[in-house]
Length: 258
Length: 254
Image (spheres, rainbow over the protein chains, first blue to last red):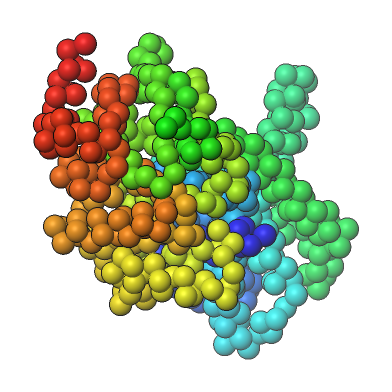
């Protein structure tokens, strides 16, 4: 456990102190602030507009944080060969994968917290209750969805032979992750077994990121969500990454370092 | 006296490394190492020489387990290098090491110390000790972006020593250093060797190899062309450069 924690801390520090990432966070906070301007255009639904725009920015920048943290890691590991110094030390390959995942996920968590704090501050300035449960849950599920995608990124990172290739695939997975549920629905309405099978494979193989989008899943008039929906999604957010990390570790065990 | 298996800390038996073809038609297989056998004795400083592309770094990476041999077998302290207990007893300094520029030297060494499971009580003192040894004591809390190339080399040496290893693998440890750095590295190697450490290193700097090594091997086109003690080289060839040139020329002709 100490080795996993050491790798996680190292990767978190490395990512969180990265200047490009710092600029990204600043940009994210400014984007959330920009929701004030956007909300002026829709005065009757001003608060809803601020929340929707803020959550959209959190979602987008959480993904960009993942992409950037992964780019930094892959570049330093593969191009600058930093991984060679680590792999000759007594850290098992699965420990390294677990630590790297936790380090990147913790970086995303910190950024989501910062962006959420900015959004809550704006809501408070507008005289709203910033501690609204629905808002906090939506932000938490955005984080969970990004953490699930980060586990898929771990598989991509051990398979990748180039940094741009890995990031392009991550971007595809991000888009497809939001579309698989719709693809499955379309396939179920078609009378084509092959297309249905292909849609099923994609649906179960890729991370289902649409599960974490709570916007259209409001359960009560007060804007709350059903526990029957939330709890299985949390279980998914635990099991999918565990499985992905096992697969990534198995691939990583065979990897050579040139 | 004939050496026994117990005297060897590193054993390389008939190791061959062939890299997978990289071209589209999968035809260009590169044989980087060809049936190399070597035994390194406990407490010696062993220098591996060779031209660029001779296979020195590949051999070191195979010994360290970073690359898997296509054929043959490697053992360190009688066990495979993948054994965690073996890894705790080795140190490795790669050529032109890179460290994250936003971290401080003390943080980087603390990370490696945690990987080795060094006790928290002694960790701080251990970090201070290796930083002093490599001459970076006053730069412990400076971010790496403020480090020169030579300072990064020294930090590379510090991380290789953080676990007080029994065997030290150094890949071009003097590249990037100035003449003062050469001398300091040489002094460190000799001091460590006096403490019983085995040192295996690759280098192009023949004068330094001549000054520190007990035994030397020359690699040429993936094969060991010659292995000889430093005393014998001095007796027969007078200096390392003459020895190296003679061996490489002879290997090239055969």
